[in-house]
Image (cartoon, rainbow, N blue to C red; front, side, top):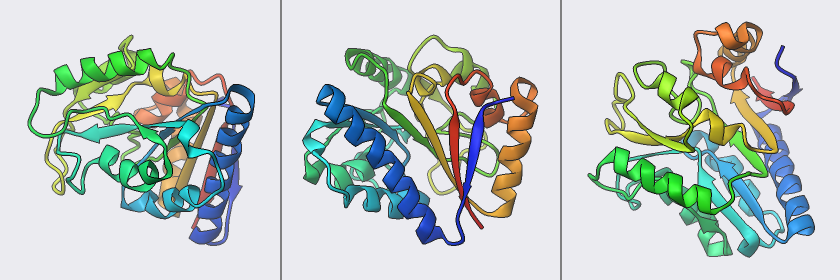
Length: 232
Protein backbone atom coordinates (compact mmCIF):
# COMPACT_ATOMS: atom_id res chain seq x y z
CA UNK A 1 0.00 0.00 0.00
CA UNK A 2 1.22 3.47 -0.90
CA UNK A 3 2.11 5.40 2.26
CA UNK A 4 -0.17 8.42 2.38
CA UNK A 5 -2.10 10.70 4.72
CA UNK A 6 -5.33 12.59 4.07
CA UNK A 7 -5.78 16.12 5.42
CA UNK A 8 -9.42 17.20 5.34
CA UNK A 9 -10.75 20.77 5.40
CA UNK A 10 -14.25 22.19 5.58
CA UNK A 11 -13.65 24.88 2.97
CA UNK A 12 -11.55 25.47 -0.11
CA UNK A 13 -10.05 28.55 1.53
CA UNK A 14 -8.82 26.50 4.48
CA UNK A 15 -7.25 23.99 2.11
CA UNK A 16 -5.57 26.75 0.10
CA UNK A 17 -4.01 28.11 3.30
CA UNK A 18 -2.78 24.66 4.31
CA UNK A 19 -1.26 23.75 0.96
CA UNK A 20 0.51 27.10 0.66
CA UNK A 21 1.76 26.70 4.22
CA UNK A 22 3.11 23.22 3.60
CA UNK A 23 4.93 24.18 0.42
CA UNK A 24 6.35 27.27 2.09
CA UNK A 25 7.60 25.16 5.01
CA UNK A 26 9.47 22.78 2.69
CA UNK A 27 10.98 25.55 0.58
CA UNK A 28 12.05 27.65 3.54
CA UNK A 29 13.69 24.59 5.10
CA UNK A 30 15.60 23.87 1.90
CA UNK A 31 16.81 27.48 1.68
CA UNK A 32 17.95 27.38 5.32
CA UNK A 33 19.83 24.12 4.72
CA UNK A 34 21.30 24.62 1.23
CA UNK A 35 20.71 28.26 0.33
CA UNK A 36 18.35 27.30 -2.50
CA UNK A 37 15.13 25.40 -3.22
CA UNK A 38 13.62 23.59 -6.19
CA UNK A 39 9.85 23.24 -6.52
CA UNK A 40 7.61 21.44 -9.00
CA UNK A 41 4.28 23.25 -9.16
CA UNK A 42 1.00 22.81 -11.04
CA UNK A 43 -0.69 25.67 -12.84
CA UNK A 44 -4.19 26.46 -14.01
CA UNK A 45 -7.37 28.08 -12.81
CA UNK A 46 -8.00 25.44 -10.15
CA UNK A 47 -4.58 26.03 -8.57
CA UNK A 48 -4.34 29.80 -8.96
CA UNK A 49 -5.71 30.75 -5.53
CA UNK A 50 -3.24 28.48 -3.72
CA UNK A 51 -0.35 29.59 -5.93
CA UNK A 52 -1.07 33.23 -5.18
CA UNK A 53 -1.39 32.45 -1.48
CA UNK A 54 2.03 30.77 -1.63
CA UNK A 55 3.45 33.79 -3.45
CA UNK A 56 2.20 35.96 -0.61
CA UNK A 57 4.28 34.11 1.99
CA UNK A 58 7.54 35.52 3.27
CA UNK A 59 10.39 33.74 1.50
CA UNK A 60 13.63 34.61 -0.26
CA UNK A 61 12.16 33.86 -3.66
CA UNK A 62 15.44 34.74 -5.39
CA UNK A 63 16.72 31.40 -4.10
CA UNK A 64 13.77 29.40 -5.50
CA UNK A 65 13.66 27.65 -8.88
CA UNK A 66 10.23 26.56 -10.11
CA UNK A 67 9.40 23.99 -12.77
CA UNK A 68 5.83 23.34 -13.98
CA UNK A 69 4.56 19.77 -13.77
CA UNK A 70 3.74 19.98 -17.47
CA UNK A 71 3.07 22.51 -20.20
CA UNK A 72 1.32 23.01 -23.51
CA UNK A 73 2.97 23.85 -26.80
CA UNK A 74 1.72 27.44 -26.79
CA UNK A 75 3.45 30.84 -26.50
CA UNK A 76 4.32 31.87 -22.95
CA UNK A 77 1.93 34.79 -23.28
CA UNK A 78 -0.97 32.43 -23.99
CA UNK A 79 -3.32 32.01 -20.98
CA UNK A 80 -2.97 28.23 -21.42
CA UNK A 81 0.80 28.32 -20.77
CA UNK A 82 1.63 26.85 -17.36
CA UNK A 83 5.14 28.30 -17.35
CA UNK A 84 3.69 31.66 -18.31
CA UNK A 85 1.23 31.58 -15.42
CA UNK A 86 3.90 30.58 -12.90
CA UNK A 87 6.24 33.29 -14.22
CA UNK A 88 3.55 35.96 -13.90
CA UNK A 89 3.00 35.00 -10.26
CA UNK A 90 6.52 34.24 -9.05
CA UNK A 91 9.05 35.92 -11.37
CA UNK A 92 8.25 39.44 -10.03
CA UNK A 93 9.27 38.09 -6.59
CA UNK A 94 12.66 37.02 -7.92
CA UNK A 95 12.01 33.31 -8.48
CA UNK A 96 13.39 31.54 -11.54
CA UNK A 97 10.82 29.65 -13.65
CA UNK A 98 12.21 26.95 -15.93
CA UNK A 99 9.94 26.28 -18.95
CA UNK A 100 9.36 22.82 -20.41
CA UNK A 101 8.52 24.09 -23.89
CA UNK A 102 9.83 26.75 -26.22
CA UNK A 103 6.28 27.98 -26.77
CA UNK A 104 4.39 28.19 -30.02
CA UNK A 105 4.32 25.63 -32.80
CA UNK A 106 7.65 23.90 -32.24
CA UNK A 107 8.41 20.19 -32.22
CA UNK A 108 7.29 18.76 -28.84
CA UNK A 109 9.88 15.96 -28.99
CA UNK A 110 12.65 18.51 -29.47
CA UNK A 111 11.17 20.66 -26.68
CA UNK A 112 11.19 17.64 -24.39
CA UNK A 113 14.85 16.92 -25.16
CA UNK A 114 15.75 20.53 -24.40
CA UNK A 115 13.73 20.45 -21.18
CA UNK A 116 15.40 17.20 -20.14
CA UNK A 117 18.83 18.82 -20.55
CA UNK A 118 17.77 21.90 -18.58
CA UNK A 119 16.44 19.80 -15.72
CA UNK A 120 19.52 17.58 -15.56
CA UNK A 121 21.61 20.74 -15.27
CA UNK A 122 19.72 21.54 -12.07
CA UNK A 123 21.02 18.31 -10.44
CA UNK A 124 17.41 17.22 -10.44
CA UNK A 125 16.09 16.50 -6.95
CA UNK A 126 13.06 18.73 -6.23
CA UNK A 127 12.38 19.60 -2.63
CA UNK A 128 8.67 19.25 -3.27
CA UNK A 129 6.34 18.21 -6.06
CA UNK A 130 2.88 19.68 -5.62
CA UNK A 131 0.57 17.73 -7.88
CA UNK A 132 -2.96 18.14 -9.18
CA UNK A 133 -5.14 15.33 -10.55
CA UNK A 134 -7.77 15.28 -13.27
CA UNK A 135 -11.10 13.46 -13.12
CA UNK A 136 -9.63 10.73 -15.34
CA UNK A 137 -6.78 10.16 -12.90
CA UNK A 138 -4.12 12.00 -14.90
CA UNK A 139 -1.31 13.84 -13.14
CA UNK A 140 0.75 16.54 -14.86
CA UNK A 141 0.16 15.51 -18.51
CA UNK A 142 0.52 11.81 -17.79
CA UNK A 143 -2.79 10.89 -19.40
CA UNK A 144 -4.50 7.60 -20.15
CA UNK A 145 -3.78 6.76 -23.76
CA UNK A 146 -0.97 5.93 -26.18
CA UNK A 147 1.76 7.94 -24.41
CA UNK A 148 1.02 6.69 -20.89
CA UNK A 149 3.64 3.94 -20.81
CA UNK A 150 6.36 6.26 -22.08
CA UNK A 151 5.57 8.94 -19.48
CA UNK A 152 5.66 6.30 -16.74
CA UNK A 153 8.64 4.27 -17.90
CA UNK A 154 10.95 6.56 -19.90
CA UNK A 155 14.41 7.08 -18.33
CA UNK A 156 14.03 10.82 -18.95
CA UNK A 157 12.84 13.73 -16.86
CA UNK A 158 10.54 15.15 -19.56
CA UNK A 159 8.75 13.63 -22.55
CA UNK A 160 6.36 14.81 -25.25
CA UNK A 161 2.74 13.63 -24.99
CA UNK A 162 -0.40 13.86 -27.08
CA UNK A 163 -3.57 13.84 -24.96
CA UNK A 164 -6.21 11.59 -26.52
CA UNK A 165 -8.63 13.21 -26.98
CA UNK A 166 -7.12 16.68 -27.11
CA UNK A 167 -8.70 19.06 -24.59
CA UNK A 168 -11.27 21.33 -26.23
CA UNK A 169 -9.97 24.41 -24.39
CA UNK A 170 -6.36 23.78 -25.49
CA UNK A 171 -6.15 21.23 -28.35
CA UNK A 172 -2.35 21.16 -28.46
CA UNK A 173 0.50 18.76 -27.75
CA UNK A 174 2.33 18.90 -24.42
CA UNK A 175 5.55 18.20 -22.59
CA UNK A 176 5.28 16.60 -19.17
CA UNK A 177 7.55 15.62 -16.34
CA UNK A 178 7.81 11.84 -16.14
CA UNK A 179 7.23 9.51 -13.22
CA UNK A 180 11.00 9.40 -12.74
CA UNK A 181 11.12 13.19 -12.48
CA UNK A 182 8.16 13.51 -10.13
CA UNK A 183 9.18 10.69 -7.78
CA UNK A 184 12.63 12.25 -7.41
CA UNK A 185 11.04 14.90 -5.16
CA UNK A 186 11.75 14.73 -1.44
CA UNK A 187 8.10 15.49 -0.67
CA UNK A 188 4.92 14.99 -2.68
CA UNK A 189 1.63 16.70 -1.94
CA UNK A 190 -1.77 16.75 -3.63
CA UNK A 191 -4.66 19.21 -3.42
CA UNK A 192 -8.10 17.87 -4.39
CA UNK A 193 -11.68 19.07 -4.16
CA UNK A 194 -14.89 17.08 -4.37
CA UNK A 195 -16.15 13.64 -3.37
CA UNK A 196 -15.64 12.18 -6.84
CA UNK A 197 -12.00 13.22 -6.95
CA UNK A 198 -11.41 11.70 -3.52
CA UNK A 199 -13.03 8.42 -4.53
CA UNK A 200 -10.91 8.32 -7.71
CA UNK A 201 -7.65 8.79 -5.82
CA UNK A 202 -8.62 6.36 -3.06
CA UNK A 203 -9.35 3.70 -5.66
CA UNK A 204 -6.11 4.37 -7.51
CA UNK A 205 -4.05 4.13 -4.32
CA UNK A 206 -5.74 0.88 -3.34
CA UNK A 207 -5.08 -0.64 -6.77
CA UNK A 208 -1.46 0.54 -6.85
CA UNK A 209 0.59 -0.85 -9.74
CA UNK A 210 -2.46 -2.65 -11.16
CA UNK A 211 -4.46 0.59 -11.33
CA UNK A 212 -5.97 1.58 -14.66
CA UNK A 213 -5.47 5.21 -13.66
CA UNK A 214 -2.22 7.09 -14.28
CA UNK A 215 -2.10 8.41 -10.71
CA UNK A 216 -2.20 4.90 -9.27
CA UNK A 217 0.59 3.73 -11.54
CA UNK A 218 2.59 6.89 -10.80
CA UNK A 219 2.44 6.57 -7.03
CA UNK A 220 2.95 2.81 -6.90
CA UNK A 221 6.74 3.25 -6.80
CA UNK A 222 6.75 6.20 -4.41
CA UNK A 223 9.11 5.73 -1.49
CA UNK A 224 8.12 8.94 0.26
CA UNK A 225 4.90 9.51 2.16
CA UNK A 226 2.21 11.36 0.18
CA UNK A 227 0.24 14.23 1.77
CA UNK A 228 -3.23 14.64 0.28
CA UNK A 229 -5.14 17.83 1.05
CA UNK A 230 -8.89 17.57 0.37
CA UNK A 231 -12.06 19.59 0.80
CA UNK A 232 -15.65 18.90 -0.31
